[in-house]
Amino acid sequence: MEQPGYEKRGYLHEDFHLFHLCDAMREPVDWHYHTFHKLCVYLGGDAIRYGIEGRSYALEPGDLILVPQGCVHRPEVEPGAAYERMLLYLSPEFLRRSSTEEAPLETCFLQAAEDFRFVVRTGARNASLLEPLRALERAKQSPGFGQQMLERALLYQLLIALTRGMQEQALPFASASAVDEKIAAILQYLASHLTEKISIDDLAARFYISKYHMMRRFRAQTGYTIHAYLVGKRLMLAREKISAGVPVMEAACQCGFGDYSSFSRAYRREFGHAPSSARCQRGRSGRRPMPQKHSPPTATMLGWLQPRQASSMQ
Image (cartoon, rainbow, N blue to C red; front, side):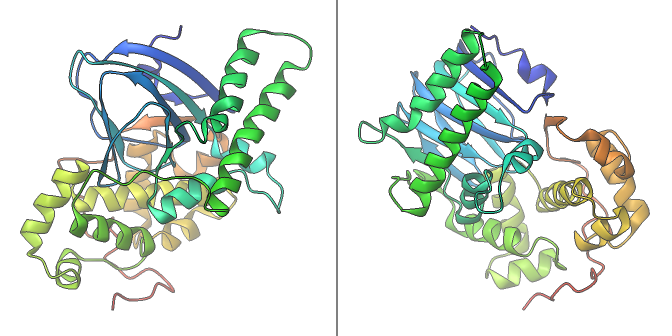
């Protein structure tokens, strides 16, 4: 059985990778995000909760958690608690290469991020949804003729079944057992207006909350300041655009960065290489904390300078 050493490496060098873990957590896991998509299935063990984008879920055996790239999350597990889970890491670039115009394989992750619904409660009725994942694990353990083709076919089957179930509204999504409704609304607003001019004062006024109270509650629910959260999301978006072929300076502007020098420094600090090298980094996706957790970024980094063609906050 795989050991959790992958957390120390924190990188995905393959198109996808499957882990089956059953171990005790030695220490609490900090809030973090990935530059790849992650699918997690809680199989059983000690009771745990899972926090993602300001929501907390009490998991039941068989629950399937969709963690889109860039979503802040963590398992909420007491030190010493042991639980069994399967983790599937998926390169966004690989999924795009493998997609057709009619069937983008990222759809289930993109839909989860858009709807802020992340936990599928498979239960007995939808247990068959997990069978492609179990078959993928068996295929990886039994090398033979056409192994790569078989593994990819099973992966496609899983993603297609998930997407169909979501589109047909046939999958039961778990409700968050703990959520700060005000912060959840702010997170959804930020996701929808990520590239626009956003200030703390305007955000507090929009949601009728003291800015200092808002900042404290936001950090309590996500582990990050609003500043750091915005910068991390914008850097992720810029990275995606550059990898897709958008010129670097244009991508920076589109993602709300008003000054290229500040953007370049923040990008290099976050990803370990210059923005111009992003096209060479495809598939090398890591588990990273959000940037500058304790040191607020500058106003320019946050995009407080109005980006081109960005609509203003109403």
